[in-house]
Image 1 (cartoon, rainbow, N blue to C red):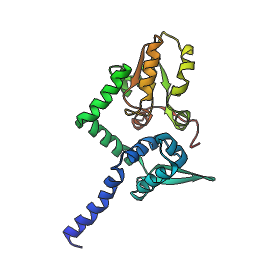
Image 2: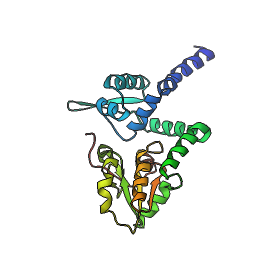
Image 3: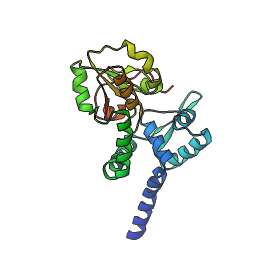
Image 4: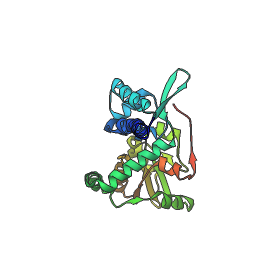
Length: 225
């Protein structure tokens, strides 16, 4: 194999990765799987696709070695093949937000509609506030996400249950909501609802996966189901 053949072979293989993720549905699947393994039915439900469509997208990601299959009894779960896949997704996501003006505008316009655009705190600040017992932290993701792993001291309050839970919250502390990350809308919805009820509410810039990647304290309730 000569020099050019070597380069052609390597870049051809690497291009399979970019082709695999060059699809909005598959990007959403990767963003979903950073929270832990899921069955194809769970994935299909979360991304609003049929099981057949979700399976096709998962197969392309599997062929590119970006996801893998894990078996637990009679159940099959899909997960990312490693932390590098998550890091690559974060880099791509942040690159798009930083340099694609349209992406940034869509996010800012959406958050302005919920009045949450200026009410974000970063994870370093959240860690300090938790250590000082200055906040009540709500995890507004679905309960299955919470059970796979969540920020230490977080309370599980899925967004569809927040309205009934609000009356239990004291008014003498800031309430912080987090969800699946910068592209998740649950925390914005939570902040808007909390503010409507007179709370000092904020959302986090990022979510549980980014918190975990920093090596900050986490808790788990269960593995997959």
